[in-house]
Amino acid sequence: MAGRRKLEKLTDFSRALKQKYGLGEGASYTPWIRVQDVKSHGHSGKIDGIKSGRTHHTLSEQESCFFYLAEFSESVIDIREQFPLLPLSLSLKTAKTLGVDHPQHPRSKNPIVMTTDFLLTCSDGKQTWYEAVSVKPKEDLSSRRTAEKLDIERVWWELLGVPFHIFCLTELNQLKSKNIQWITDVKRKKYRSFPNEVREKAKHLLMAGTVQLEDICRAFSHEFCISSEDALMLLKSLLADKEVVVDLARPIVTSGMIEVVEIKVNGKSEKYAS
Image (cartoon, rainbow, N blue to C red; front, side):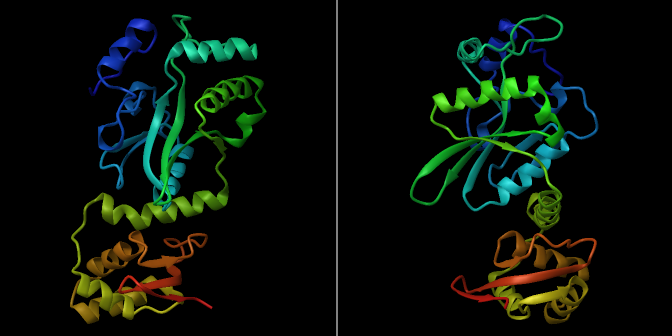
């Protein structure tokens, strides 16, 4: 499982399917392509999923940023990255219909199994649906070949009745993603949990508006007789669970401040910043 796999010909694809790559959902899903299957350029990574309970494989900084944004979304209940467009015959037929060349392996020249960066499972509590997302640097969209491959993906998903989106990283999304990564590391690292009584009391110590992290941690440390590190983890756990909602468009780590816009008390009442 740990070594790099060859995905050059039909026998490789058949073997991958037998080993359950690209199949399943939630904790049982294994991406068609893993970090160790590609040459690293220093931007790939493995992220412990909170909702899925498994390790997610992202192949670029842009994909990592999108992952954090998607996972933090209330409507997203599962994320399957590097999702294979199978059967291969369908993408080949789609490429032929569009009049474009199907992607092939550079060495074997055999057609490869295409992948979509992310397949999201979404729910509003009443109905469930899927959304496919391709993550691309903005500068790549001017490439004719990139457009051709995106067209194959788009039509493939349209045939299945699944909306297809293209995500390009912006400075704002990158900032939000970094904030989410900082907030949620308390859950990914499985830091100590805090009793509900402590969490509720902690929320009563907060007010809507801009406040320094240092001041919050000092108040938590004094009230609960805990270390500054524990105080910060307590705050992060409230943010990660969205019991305290902050403006993610403002830098948190570099500024040392958060802007509290909503505090949920006892799971019912809410306070909003003016």
